[in-house]
Length: 116
Length: 113
Image 1 (cartoon, chains in turn cyan, orange):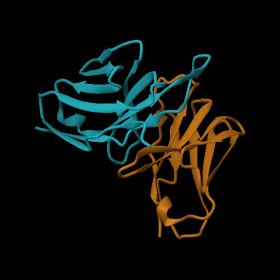
Image 2 (spheres, one colour):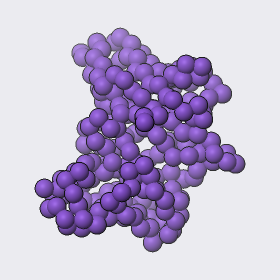
Image 3 (cartoon, chains in turn red, yellow):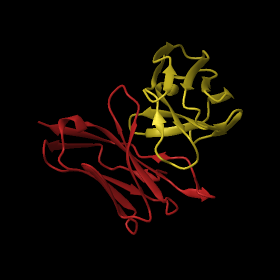
């Protein structure tokens, strides 16, 4: 059963507007979350992360919000640019022992298209 | 590039033949991973390694084996390729067991006919 769910396979947004990508998780042990971005014919690249002790983390145009009670996180991109068009993967992991973390569990991805 | 290369980039092979994919890193990272990406499934972990000769299974390990005889190389072998193993395979590296964000290779597109 899927532990990390990205229920929107695709999203289309106008340049300059906000893009909101959503991710839900089912495993209450997950305490660290990451977003990756993937262009065609390339490997995924790390974008931004958030620990469960926070509810928000910002990096430039990218902000990730975490709602632990709802087991939901979202990635906001403001303003969206055509170069942001890519597949975005949500990933999660749990601290297992001594600060170590388990392997990443990925969602299926959301394809973002930003139209000029 | 971030010091991780995969070879070959593309391969077409016949059902029943053995295939080995190679991941090479120059970062001296301890952890290495093999994922496959398929439409509708996202990225799924096949096997991973936490040191030379130390490997473990992921969620979709059936039909795959791995070896790591040197820190820098992690090999993924399909002993007898099947059409269900047609996929894009990604290798990733991480320095330790805390997630700062894996670094992924560019992928190998494998087609089994």
